[in-house]
Length: 557
Image (cartoon, rainbow, N blue to C red):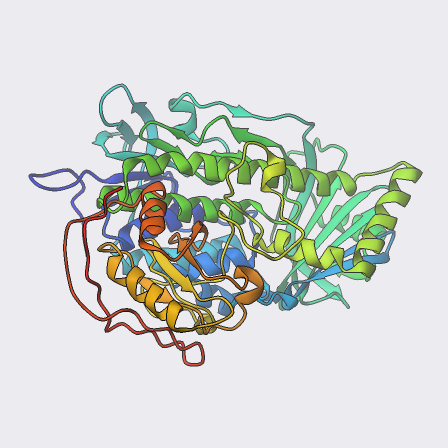
């Protein structure tokens, strides 16, 4: 599967993705999987970046990576993370058990080096016909109807690429962001962390991410498996030209860790400056930003790469749908509104976690420790902490402020929330057969009978199925276990986006669904086809009635 690198008669211009880290790789693979031509450039196309900082892949990212078949290889190559533990002065405060997550095929995180993550996604990129070209973005002209990029090659030559769209996934020092004139905004003081990977001998926890607080600062420990660990320590300053030595990590491990260990020769170490910055916008015309190009924040909670992966999937299905005519162009405006508030919330929560680890005053330490212990004993830490860490609580509810995005006190779902439904371009994700599947590229209409599946429900289901527009799959999930606490006892139709977030909750009536589809940006077609209505899926086998097609009519308001 190959694509032209320049537009020819009847051919589309490519989408130009700048940056082949995890975010750029996921974006390019998602677009290619949906038949959109892509050119992916990076200043180093020789292979994955060595000694990179991202090390934890959380459950939501595993779900999204499962769309392109990358989650299972990462699980095999990484180390399972079952819980997150918090300590103060070597005394246990509380834990978040990821293994208790009930609405995902992946009730755990995975600790894996970023270069391994990149190599896995590169393999999936190649399966879909993609490749990485060497090139550095040296110019970007956005004055015309389409952006024109100047790409400088290794030999000094320059190529001009006219693309339909340009996506900057080129990191915190993004050339795309700079050339597009987008500011990176933020407040708060930077915090320095020394980060290193290497062996630690001793009785260290093999399947827990451990945060250790003390009056001298914070320590984070993530196990890669096989006696190898990621160590992150807060430091007041750093004047050295080389990376921090093992002796520095040993000193703070002795001082802050509840378990003793001996730090061996490090594979690498560096100083990381934790900042709080979000781009003023993640879209400027035909230019988009994703990942660290759009937002940078503290390493606390290991949320950076995971947030970027959500950017990538959110943008990819919308952009591919617009390119192929499945969605109205206005849907692209929702990329910034969706992801900007999500990024701001991650900035806030990671900054809070960082500041908690740097408390020094006695009353601050006492209040923090008492709060975490109480939250642990009452179950509040688990109830809210697990979805937060897993990024399951990211919601695209209509919001004007961060407060509007906070999770509610009940499990009842609202528009914008994540629904436990899963999808893949190839074979289904292992373990995901316990939940309904959705289309990876189009809106899916799920029908929920509520407390009784009577004759009235059957009639409503048939009417909705027959009136469903061409290209919108319809599934009855009424017999699926576990959805009653989420969807309630009243009948309803749930319009679900390709990324698993709810686009609309409405009455199971053709007129209401027509309105919901139009508001969600669906582009209707005038085709007709006839068949019997969709029957309920079988949750015990994961089987779907794929024989049912639909009688389609042009939907008019």
